Image (cartoon, rainbow over all chains, first blue to last red; front, side, top):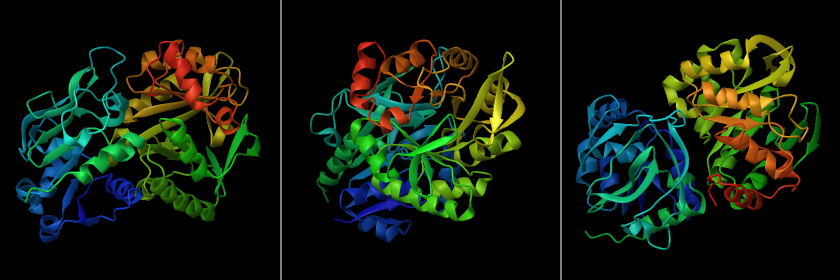
Length: 200
Length: 242
């Protein structure tokens, strides 16, 4: 199976690369449109800042390309946020794959620390990403912005308030948490993504 | 895990070292046992040792599936870039940030606050918590609560506080100072130094209001099992991943 990781100025590309290698997959890390289009699966990782990253994607023409991919695509963390319609981080329009805006966490109490960093349970699971018994399992989050619960939410979690831990629409999948850093549970989720059939 | 020349060692009151195994194997074992995060501290001073440590960071990233922080010998942004490129999730800065606080701002601006852990070694001297440089060898004029607040304002994502007097003694964490830190800061505080039994972890969370607790020797020498510790903490009403 050919798995492509979208190459851009993101922080966690090598972590995703290593995680796939631990599962026996050697991905190609590329920003070449033909290679991305030809892959069986595409992973769109991300650690960074929304506005700069969107500018980078536009310069490379990757914004349109990602939207038009028809194989299973997995966005991770900032990757998921960039797949939404708009982000409060840098007040920037994003790819619009998921019709929902990305909002900044507003602490309600002293204990509500931002960025949200740590392990949280995922619930209300409804996506092939979560096949197997993963309800209430812990995954690892690092983020200051969140996606509200919406029609595309395929997993929820709770920090300060409920929000989307994962999204799914058509061939597009996304997780706010980092499966590549979420221990055995994360590996299970990545394996599930690799098993998703390709409709085209 | 303190790492010297590619091996894990643990300081007892920052002085005597006992060998505690291979960093990658030990980290992988801790990951399987249920550790939520690992911290690797390079205590090698030489240039040669730094290269060894960078290679080790890459091997850790390849083999371990939970987040890990690396620290030691980080003086400038180039060191941060080198360690993040090798696969570290976070970097921990200590002496270099005290000498040049702007380093914290540079790291946060380039890689985000979530990458930047500020480690503070402090000792309670004449009624004040004094921050130390160089692994606890050199006192400074910085005081713990002021320096931690300054680090937060510069963009630190977490504070890793080690009480030098508690470290290695296994008599519990410095809970009063932790509670004061937690009440003053708006970023997570990691308790370090003093774990000897399960109750100490509970107290770091309940009394010290810490967001996380770090320990080394009690785990390295098998005195406390991570799974056992976590089920105890959950019974005590502390929300932990099991």
